[in-house]
Image (cartoon, rainbow, N blue to C red; front, side, top):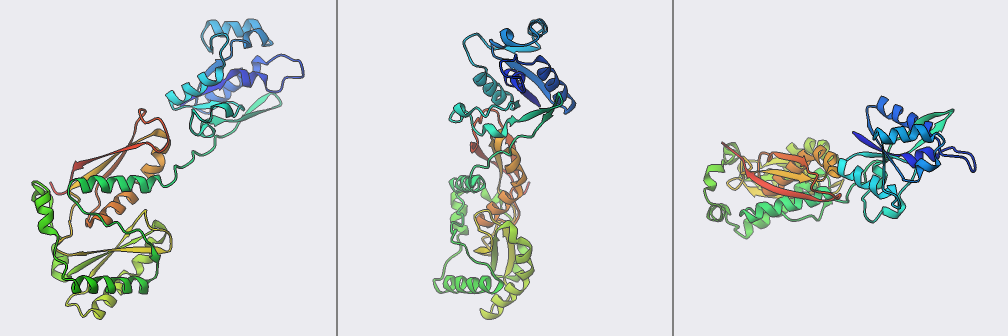
Length: 341
């Protein structure tokens, strides 16, 4: 990774009052960064060559282009920030660049602070990038919108009821009772009408059809997943007994990024409506800033989408960074055909 060295800032560190900037500071910084595996790039203000303590040596470095100098009359700050953004690099500087906060996002996550002790530089660490609030939810919402454009209905409710085994069972009983009373018909025929050649990508969960009239997706926060799984069997038995069903419903617990910790939602689907495979996989193109965070949560995105669509298996979710997406929070979603081949 490239580290843009704010050479003027480094050279001025530790100089005595009315003293000259120190070339050795810059050389120490280069050596330390190289030992850490970084590729240092030195950028200096035009005025530094006139102020530095070892002018002759500094000018040699300029001639060799080992130090790059910005044009006279301009500040190196903007040049440094732009280069770091373009190269997706870091910046070695104790300048916080406050005047540029509006133009450059999350400068603190790029800036590496430093200090000197007994002539040796101590290289610090940059701050963790700030997460764009609810970016995972925004991604999931957009993915569901894309599925709806292709004719798939998605479960929208995000009320979040307090999580417990008995609460899940009661909610399922109430919802199934209402569905039966209102004689809700299967949506499968409508789905076929909306999606050309959809039958090539649709496989019903045959075992579910044989054993249950309903599939109950229990949507929980990733933090609550393991605890909710332990209650799945008891929930199925309780619902089946109370409703006097011939077969207990299948209960599937899914991580859901819309659901708050210690809360739940239910997506209850007739067994003949469930999709065994996701007919589309999800491609996410995202800015470098958010890439690692979103990549780490790609399975939770897949689980959320599958649970809200009523898909038995998760879609494949691929996450790729793009230099064209310059700011935190920027992303693009595309669907490509998936499911059974």
